[in-house]
Amino acid sequence: MNSKVKQSQAITPELRKWIVDQAQAGFTADVVLKSMLASGWDEDVAVDAMETTLKAHLEEQAVKKGLPDPVPVPRPAIDQSPLYLDAGDRQVHVLQVVANPPIVVFGNVLSDEECDTLIAAARPRLARSLTVETKTGGEEINGDRTSSGMFFQRGENEVVKALEARLARLLNWPEENGEGLQILHYHPGAEYKPHYDYFDPNEPGTPTILKRGGQRVGTIVMYLGEPAKGGGTTFPDIHLEVAPKRGNAVFFSYDRAHPSTKTLHGGAPVIEGEKWIATKWLRERRFE
Image 1 (cartoon, rainbow, N blue to C red):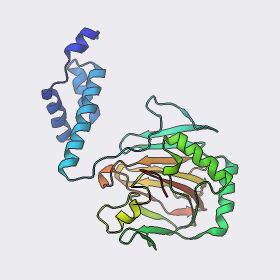
Image 2: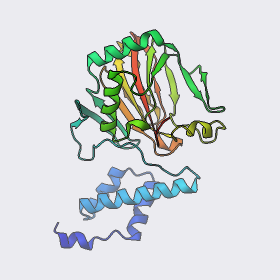
Image 3: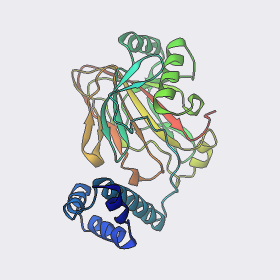
Image 4: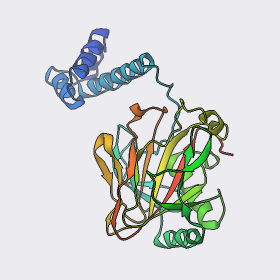
């Protein structure tokens, strides 16, 4: 279709209303797009109309529901569907991308040697894993989390320094906005039941937590030691499970502290073997 025909296909208020009506009626984006193409719409115009209309509609609905305003989040450079990303000191593989919620599965994030070094340094410092206690801003033992773990401070050793610089480049987010690197160890039967990583704005302890760097806006879970069975990272809202392959990682972001982000996730029980992971949480601002 030539440019003159494209220019004649204006994205009118009537078209936007029709797109919203189809979405509310339960038709998927693929079905709506096919319908537009069958009616003679240019594909570029149709895709642009759908993306801008549905995004605006979702934001309007969010405001009506009283949801928190969206905030900037880390964004890997995957707009052009690359197979590899330059993370500075190594090429990271892009294995899988989910649009909603924003999830990217990476390969080759860490070498075997780096995995072994982190595990060896963490092992003597392991203790029962705690969770943030949002009623007070402190920490507590939570029955939903049955792993053991520890934290490396930012830049604590050479491997941690290299990994933090790599992640900052990979995720396009400042190193100083990251929390310390958490290492977790899961024995058979250990799990972390589905949860959200952001801090609940309705809890009384949240304002105290947010003073240290604002909300969490992204998470990357890196697999250091893989179990023979079980232990995947699950996203129940979208029926996705990421296998805990050593050296790989799963990243996801959340632009508002609300379940509408669909970032409910958990660590499935380990069935056989042991699982080791490293988790980095990213904040809005510098984490102190």
